[in-house]
Image 1 (tube, rainbow, N blue to C red):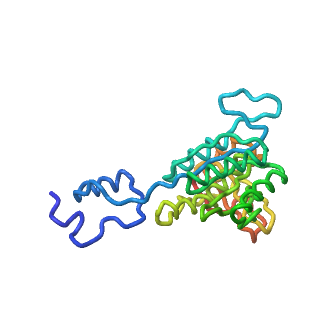
Image 2: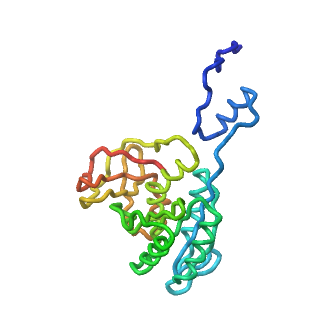
Image 3: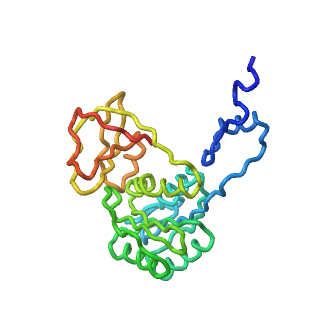
Length: 262
C-alpha cells in the first residue's frame, strides 16, 4: 500500500528543467497524469566528411582509399546525445564544393561538424571558409589526440572541424562537442560515469597538453590500448579513457587513475 503523498508530495517538484526524459522520468510523468510536457527542440546537426580518399561504406576501398567512418560515428554519437544528424555526404578536397555544403548545412542546421582535412592545407581551407562568413575561435587545441581541431562560429551557429582520424575525432566529440550539445539540448550538465583503477603499465605523456588514452578494464586494472589515431580497434576494445592533465608527464604502472567510461 502506497499512502497519498508518500511517492510525490503536493507542492514539491518531481522533475526539474533540463532533465533528459528516460523511461524512468516517463513513468513519473504518467504517475502525475502528465501526458505532455514542454521540451527543448532536438538540435539538428549537419555532418560533412571531407577527403579525396573517402568512399561510401558500401564500397570496397582500392589503393589508398578508406571508408567514410566518421559520418557514421558522428551520426550515432549525435543521436545518443539527443540530436538529429543531417548527413551531407562526402566532399572532395575542393574549396567551392565544401563552401556549398557548408552553406547548405548552416541554412538547415543548428550546428555543423566537418570531419577530415588531414593535411595542413586542407585544415587551412576549412578554417578559411568558416572565417569568410563567421569567425574561427580556435585553430588547433592543446589536446591529444585531437590537436588539429577547429572551433568556429557562423551566424551564431557552432561549426567544429574534427580530425580525420576516427580515434582522434571520437575524443574531440567527447571532450569538446558533448558539452556543447548538452547546452544546446537544454540538458543540465552531466557528469560522466567514472571508476578508479590501477594502471597495468606506464602511460608516458608530454607536458603542455591534455592527453586522453584509451584503456581496457580487466577487473580493477586499466590496461592502455596504445595505437594510431586512424585505428578503430582501440576504440572497440577499450572501455574508456584516462585523462593525463597537461601539467604532468604521464602516469606510472601501479598508479591509481580515474577511468572515464564510454
